[in-house]
Length: 100
Image (cartoon, rainbow, N blue to C red; front, top):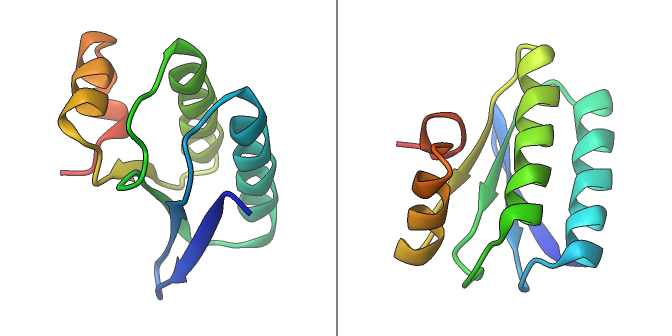
């Protein structure tokens, strides 16, 4: 499994345990869609263990953000390193994706 879950009352934190690539992103997206349909909490992605992201990963995150937003739920990223934050900022997605 590419992630572990930390259950909280109003949200579930998905802690990514390995680098994201097209295969692991697909697995994460499938799990997020399942979570969205079967749980009423918000989803938080903990990126502590992720060193880099690319445009494919950002596109996947924006798809997830839109799906959660359309269901009046929150999808955010926490604990991103400076490189990952910078990539998100260069794509002007920090307002949507990064948890303050």
